[in-house]
Image: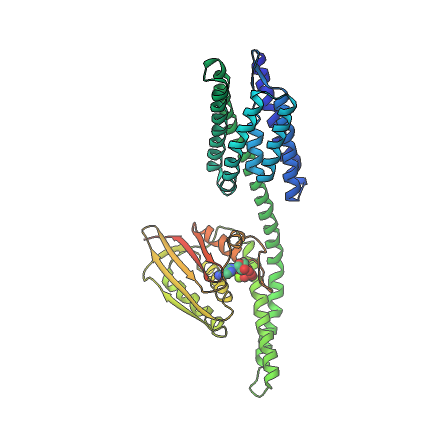
Amino acid sequence: MSIIKDFLLQLTFMLIPIFIYYTFITERVKNNKNRKVTMTILWGISIIACMSFPVLFGQNARLELRIIPLLLGTLYGGFLPGIFLSALIIFYRLSLGIDIGFYNTVLVLLLSLPVIVHFQKSFASSKKDRRVKIAVGLSFYYCLIGLTLLGILRGFSKEYLTVPIIHLFFAVLVTWCFTMLIEAIREIHQLRLEMQNSEKLRAIGELTSVFAHEIRNPMQATRGFLQLLNEPDLSDKKKEYIQISLEELDRANEIINDFLSLGKPSIEDKKRINIGYQIQRVVNIIHSYTLNRNVEIETDILENCWIYVNPQRLNQSLINILKNAIESMPNGGTVWIKCTTDDRYIKISIKDQGIGMTKKQIERLGSPYYSLKESGTGLGMMVSFQIIRSFKGKIQVNSEKDVGTEFIILLPQIS
Ligand code: ADP
Ligand code: MG
């Protein structure tokens, strides 16, 4: 009975840091570095507690799960927390006396920490399922090394190896449980953040749709009168002023359009449309924009491919992507629009020779207000992603800094 009690105690030592971290720390501590430090301290306390109250089998055999705080701390925290937690284990073990167990501890850490740190990078960029596999694999590796070394140091006898084998089994199982638990909690957090975000956007959408119409009317009137003022006998300077005013009014109108589409519900007026015809229309609309920027558009478009979408919304997302492609080439260049198909998807590729993006920039693409342009709104991509998603499509982005960017839009095909 006391073994079970001890074992449950070990589990509690690991549950408490997870509970404290995700209930109190993630929400309140905004600085990423401070959060990491707090998490490392919590895992450190957990390690000391695990080592102080091990599960005792008979006289000399101890079983404890310090690998789990060490592993989770390193995988979720990184290199430095890993070093700190390992040092903590070594010093605490040292205070318990120098014996075979101590050498074993040091050797196991020396052999396993580099491997854990090596996998940490791919762990950080992986999805849930792969993360769980990595954690379980590393836990297995750590225990196996411990077991082998103990065998070498003490001899491979049943007497000495029974407990390490049980340890291996439990450590792997508990690693699996706790990684799943942490991943589930992180997922819930992520979902909550996204919900807060979409709620914010919905509120913005509602507000702007009220104002937008009121602002647009006077803008239309101003635009009309400005065009009337633009007579041939005006001086060049005045003509230029009028031109700038018109462009700025158009820009204001675009920003209003972007804001308006944020609040639109996803159920919309879809139609069966010919994608080639639609792309051609978009190219015609954007034509004037390309002229004064020295940009050429080359198209290679399929005939007779049909998709089921809302044409205005599709136009809007294509125009946003095309405009970005054009704006990414300040000295001019070519934009290629290609449309191909396989049996399920229609693939629209929009490729430029512009400034390109780094991996980090691609990751941030589509988050609200993310813009690197002086007068950018950072809404265009977000709206486009939202629109394509609402058509059950996908957007892929390939980009290389200073070479160019390719946006690939995949839309489900209908016959
Ligand atoms: P905005 O155009 O108002 O800046 P967007 O949401 O349309 O906002 O784009 C966000 C950012 O993504 C841009 O500021 C730009 O840095 C980057 N971006 C988008 N498309 C491209 C592209 N084709 N080439 C290079 N950078 C791009
Ligand atoms: Mg844009």
